[in-house]
Length: 321
Image (cartoon, rainbow, N blue to C red):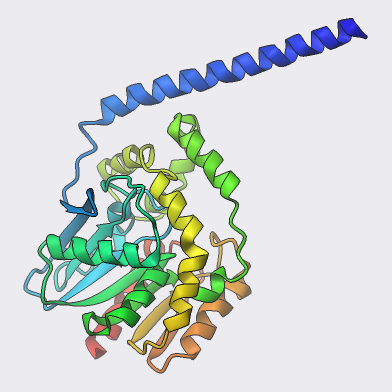
């Protein structure tokens, strides 16, 4: 019996040592690759300092437009600027567009500042201001979790918001009974930090921006570079941990009637069944005087899949404002 126990302990010890060795190899490989990729990790936006950390603001399109379209990314989207490019490039001839990459996203710095809704909104507005966007009305294009920020913005500063075009946006009820697996998210962060994701390229290659959008090969490669630096960052984790509280805060003040057009997916990629996900959004819109919605038969990243339809319908909506 003692011999069996000894052999078992030796086998377990070897497995642990091999696991540690693999982690060390992965980490060293990750650091070497990061160093090689440094020359690619350069923004073509503006880095502005807000709350003692740099936030990247990408601005393009028609600067003579009196309205600016602000694209707001969902939780954990590693590169908001590239993720939205397929859609916002369609608007650039007639409208000015902006993408604010929140702390820990894209080219913005990772920050340990709280991710409560007031802080997030302050940083978004301040970043736009410091990037030179002033005295213009905003039409917000929030995807997923940024729906909460966009609706909060419309409630807190209604004079700034001309309308909201929701790209399968979250609404408060979606978070009421949601269970957030913080342990799993922390493990994902750890795996990303030591470079495990580099050995599973199918993860980044299955990203909607790469798989469904119309990015160039060069842009896809940049997306991969960003992905390996901006997967489940500390800022993203904190934002997810705060989302239920942030949604409750929005719900407690939500009486906005800013015009809204929400595009609604089939729920795939949200963690909810199709009918449940759609019910959250449709029920919300039905309680708004100036709300309308369009059902799309596609998964959650609607802006990379049904971008032409979203563009066409958004133009009709914007022209009525």
